[in-house]
Structures are given as C-alpha cells and as structure tokens.
Length: 366
Image (cartoon, rainbow, N blue to C red; front, side):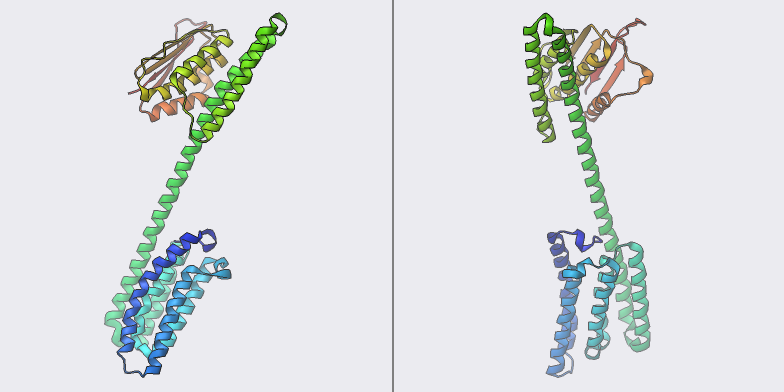
C-alpha cells in the first residue's frame, strides 16, 4: 500500500482504486441526511453535487492520474487531503455537524497512502487534534458520537494499514528468498554440469595431444569425442537454465566410465539396476561430482563405486584430502543437495596408509 504509483503496475492501481471505492457506499448516510433536511431543491442539488465531487476526488486520490503520480508521496497525499477537506468545508453549511461522518475517508487516505508508519501516525494525530478542536468549538453537541467515530476509525485504519504493510513485506521477503534459492540451485546445477564436462574435455584433449604423433587415428577419435562432449555440455547448460535437465543414473555411469578411462584411472563401477527411481537423479548428481573430483584432485589409479538403495560410495586410492584445504563449491553443492533430501554426506580416508590414504565419499539417504 505504500508503493508509489510510478512503481506500481496498471492492474495494481486499478485494484487499489476499486478497493478504496467500495467504501464510498458509506456516503449514503450524508446523502440521506441531506435529502431529509429542510433545504430547498436547489440547495439539495448543490449538496449532492458536492458529495459527488468529494467521491471523485477521493477516487482520484488513489489513482493519481498524469503528472500527479510523479509527485513525492507525502506532498501528494496532503494535497488530496486538502482537496477532500475543501469539499467538506463547502458541504458544512448544508450538512452541519453530520459532515463529520466523512471523517473516516480522510483517515483512510492518510493511513494507506503515506509512505511510513511514523508519518501516518503523525498526520492522523494532527487530523484528530484539529477535528476535536473543531468539535469543541463549533459542535460540542456532537461529541458523544463523533469522538468514538474519530477514535475508532483512526485506530482501525492505522492498524489495518500496518497489517497490510507487514503482509506485503513478508511476501516480498518470501519472493526474494525464493529467487535466491533459484539462483543458488541454478548456480549449483551449472557448476556440476560444467565442472564434470570441462574436466573430461580437458583430460581427453591432453590425451589427444599426446597421441597426435604416436597414434593419429586415436587422437582424431579423442578429438571427435571432445567435440561431442562440448556440444552435449552446451545442451545440458541450456536445459539446466530452463530447469529441464536431470541426469539419468545409467547414463551417468557410462559417462563416469568414459571420463575415468580418459584419465587412465581404472573404473570399478556397479550395474545400472538396483536404485529406487526417486533416488536415481540425486545419486547421479553425486556420482558426477565425485568422479569429477577424483579426476581433478586425487591422482588416483583406481576408482571404485558402490551403489544401492539409499547409498552411494565412491572410493579412490589417491593422495587423499587435506583437512585444512576447505570445501570446494562442488562438494558444498553436493552436501546441500543431500541435506535437502534428508540425507547425509560423509567424507573420510579410504585407507589407513599415510602415503596414499585415498578418499571415501559416502552418501546416505533415508
């Protein structure tokens, strides 16, 4: 309710204006009072015209057409308040003290259009004080009903505006949190996809370079695979950006074997069967990242993978992990995926040998 018109969409402005217009039904009371008065037809016509003018100014104060929408919020609101007050001043000779029945419209304008709680409370108190002074000076006979109306409408409008503001802030925070989660998920997906693919491409390119003179045909074959991998990686990134990509367990086992063979690491992999369908995607992501880390960092000669319902183990006989080196983005992303699924990721040495302790990565799912 406190967003400036320049920042709102057309639909939002229409919605807020229609919502505010609903309360114009309460103008029926001064209209009935005017029609029941002893004024002549001409005076009644003028009174009805002024009430219609009041209604139009009130609606326009929510819509704020043209250049008025670019004014600062507080001056614009006070300008509309002056316009409404002027209409009521012209109505006073016809309605007398009954004109105070329009007071809630003034409070609503201040409560819902001013930009901050502090400014709302200040200006509502100023309006209440001026109205109370007018009552005591001009219409003390109306104190018994006007004071409760002033107090109740002021408190009600201020509280309602604050509640709506809080709901809007909560919704905005929820949207920001969702956007942050989507960005984190997208970043994690792109990292996992590119990290694995670029590692395999690097390994195969190095292998092709060594084979250029010794075995040109194999070098050409490796380069063809590099080309295919680069195209596949580009496609996977496009699909990940669109939220469409999820790796398949069987395909990931094949990709892991290809990558390990290219890095001249013996691959001991399980068969594609035996995993529940609902766990395959997550474990395929974990296998991709674990194998990528083995190729990049382990300096291993053997990589062993075990998999079963709720369980994935990837071991290597490499140099192991340095406890003081921290955790990379890939491992953090993997741990976060597993945590979100209600599981845990355990990283430890695969062997007691101090020279080549290797690394054992285990994923446990409920």
